[in-house]
Structure formats: C-alpha cells, structure tokens
Length: 123
Length: 106
Image (cartoon, rainbow over all chains, first blue to last red; front, side):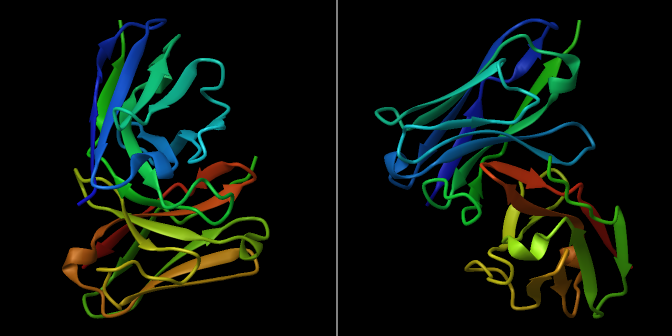
C-alpha cells in the first residue's frame, strides 16, 4: 500500500524558512517522480514543484522559483521542500504527491497524495 | 501562462447526471485529468488521460475532451459524490489546475 506522510509544517514569520518532508513507502521510490502541491485556506490546488524520476531535473512554479528547493533522498525514501523567504501568500496546506511515471510532460498525473501539512506564514 | 477555467459551482438532484466543464485554449490537444476532493480530505484521481478511470473509481464517472473543453460527467449522481472537483493539464513542463468546481447534490 502506497503511503505518503508529510511533516515539518508550522507557524513561521514572513521572511523565514521551513523544510517540509514527505516519507514514502509501498513503492519503489527511486523509480518515480514526486511533486508538491499546495492549497491555500478555502482555495484551489496549486502545483508548486516536482522532482523527476530520473533524478536529473527539478521543476518549479513561477510563484516559488528562486525561493523553494525540492530534493529527493532515495536512500531514505523521502522528498523534501526547502522553503526560504516565506511570504503570507505561501500559507497553505502542502501536499506531497506521487507521479504516475517519471514526469512525462502531458502524460503523467498524481496517483497518490499525502494528507498534507499546514504552513502558516504570519507575524 | 496557461489557464483552466471551471464553473465555481454545479448543482444536481440525486440520481441525475452532473456535468462539470473545464475550459482552456486548445485543451483538446492535451490530456485532461480530474481530481475529487471531499472536505478535510486529500484529492483523489477520478479520471486520467481524458477518459480513463483508475481502479476503484465507479463506472458512473466518465470524461471527455475536445476543442477547448474537457468535461467530467457523473451519471446517477449520489450524495457521496458531493465534493470539489479539479481539472488538471500540462503547460510544457508545468502542471496547471483549474480553479475547482463545488458539486452539490440536492
């Protein structure tokens, strides 16, 4: 059974940093792309970042480019999101999502999601 | 940047057919995906590559995609189908979601 468990969320001041983790199990973690998707309170889904299955490419939404860094530790079956220079508009539940394949543009999709971790950016 | 537009809300009586649309420029040239999200829960994939159903998704869920519009159709809608539905497509190497549609079964 595929399981994705996020952690690391919390309250942080504007301009601060936070690192999210996603512990994966139930599948061969190294073979698949992984992604982060967020949802602001009462709002819709927003794709944030992805790490390719081949391990040689990372992708970011324009809204977080230059501030967030995605990484993947296949030895620990864990996906990370380092978030720096946080803003109030980054407040959201952050979901870790498994990609069906290696991140094939146009053909891939999110087949499993974690339960999410809440990040609140406020003074 | 690429945008997907969904109606904010759709209402349907129990047992009837619900149709939720998702519009985007030449969306029919791409694959469309649909996710269901119930209150307090994580999203669940209900349709992939326009019209395919993942294992465990009831047959009453179907999808189509042509021109500028993708459509999620729920036949014989049940109370348990009340949820937010999001369409998704690709814009080059980025993933794009629609704004979501709240389906009310009344």
